[in-house]
Length: 386
Ligand SMILES: NC(=O)c1ccc[n+]([C@@H]2O[C@H](COP(=O)([O-])OP(=O)(O)OC[C@H]3O[C@@H](n4cnc5c(N)ncnc54)[C@H](OP(=O)(O)O)[C@@H]3O)[C@@H](O)[C@H]2O)c1
Image: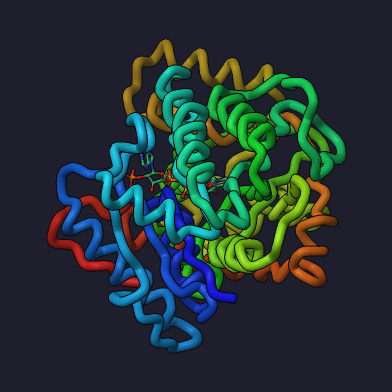
């Protein structure tokens, strides 16, 4: 049976990969995308369409019917009724079978009220729309493995009863969004993604995130130390692998609440190995690293890192201040080692998750980031190159 899917957050880091994977499935007849209105909407729409088509052309050339099947609507999840025009809302209510809610404020350091307005109240508003969709079969919430916060050891694929300790308010608001979604009377699936690093084969990153900023500064030799403890691991997945899983999940019926970790799980990368691989790649490809002028970062304990933070603050060095700001987004999680159970995600997939060779993907992402100077598309004239 064919499907009509509503997607929020399609213009973000994961969105274009997700749309490409959804469009690859012929059963997904139509896809409606909610895009924030405002400056450059026409250009952003064009970039999104081009990117989706270009992603599809890489690897398995395929005609997706982007023009006929992908429909964009202006909406802002911070506004009542999502700010949708009446006609658009009615169209969605009549036709949508699956909602994939991926829109979020993903700035870990944003003020809590801003995060809450988008991640919690925004989810509430999207849920309201989903309740009005007469034939809804699934509400798929794109969440984050980070909702585990400061917990350590094995994290199960289940809703947590109580709020744990969180590293930042982003995690807390995503946890609240999960609770809200689970409490709705809808058929709900929650996909908790781990960090999506970029395209498996191309290294393509549509929007750079916290991990990319840390790699950026490391590449420039501005990260002399990283705070971590024994057992610290980084759980990375290729963005298109996550998107493929989400597209499959959208097609799988859900009866009861289903919570899945789309993550590397036991194959998460020990921090020392991640640093060694990154440094080896830089030494092989980047001058300054190649001739040994830049030293590899060392792993230190929290007290040493705090000392470093204080000395940077005292120096008033603006560049190092920015480096530390990025570090505060990504590094603290290293102090709470954990392994995400992926049993349910694998059951849905029908076997082990199709994880990419992380060394190869990481190298491609670094090359891509350096080529773009770690800048996300902003300019009106830039074309989407994948
Ligand atoms: N990327 C990762 O590694 C990762 C890992 C775990 C979980 N996740 C989850 O996956 C989802 C997508 O993440 P992402 O990395 O693609 O995020 P992102 O790059 O920050 O993009 C966020 C998306 O949400 C949209 N959005 C934000 N505020 C909105 C509003 N008020 N109204 C409508 N749309 C709004 C953005 O639209 P604009 O283009 O207008 O800004 C953009 O499309 C999020 O729920 C995130 O929590 C991501």
